[in-house]
Image (cartoon, rainbow, N blue to C red; front, side, top):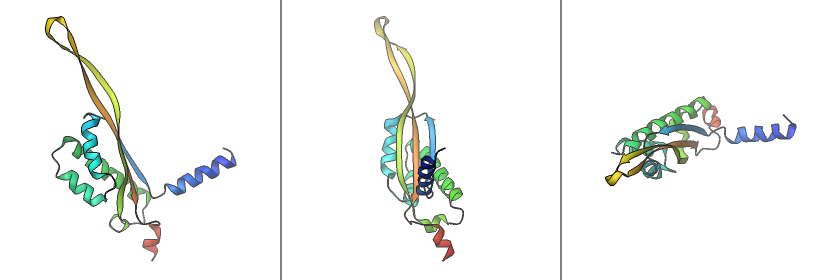
Length: 140
């Protein structure tokens, strides 16, 4: 690796030091239904988002809630010295992409066949801290 690439990689690592990512691939619900829940919690504090997802009746809310808990655990693993309660975490980004599609045929009248598309999705959550340097919290 050249010096220029190494410097750019180090800068990227330092920028993403407080950011934690969690992904769920091939979730069995359709992307349209999952985006409804993702739009509710985008940009919100983690505690608020967990409460919204816990008491929602949608099927995708439980999967997003588990994924958010995983992202919080990933953030905790990156920032061992900082406490989650003091760091003021929020959902920086959440997006739902379309996944693989199972294509089936359903019988229809007069010898025809209707196409059924069983959709899936990929969910990505990025959690960040509103406090710039969380390592300074513990030292003070």
